[in-house]
Length: 74
Image (tube, rainbow, N blue to C red; front, side, top):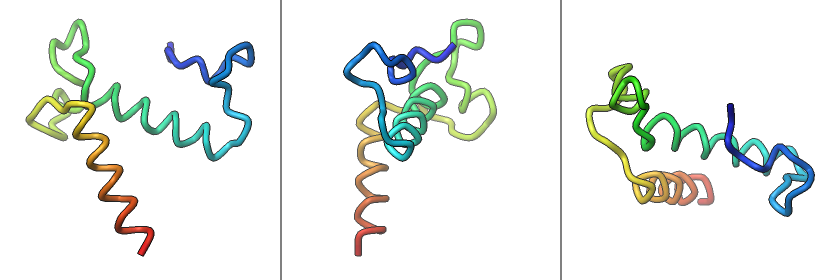
């Protein structure tokens, strides 16, 4: 179950634009896969799949997004 209130119209965070919703979902799944430790796996899904060997922090996602933005806005 996705725990993001963007999917319910009753909140202020509801995405009216498809692009904003897509970006929010991408950030959520990046957080879910790289930052959040899974209860039964006891590691993140990305670590269990062998994609990364370190536990990411939210600041890692922010710096990744900033680097991406700087490279695509030139």
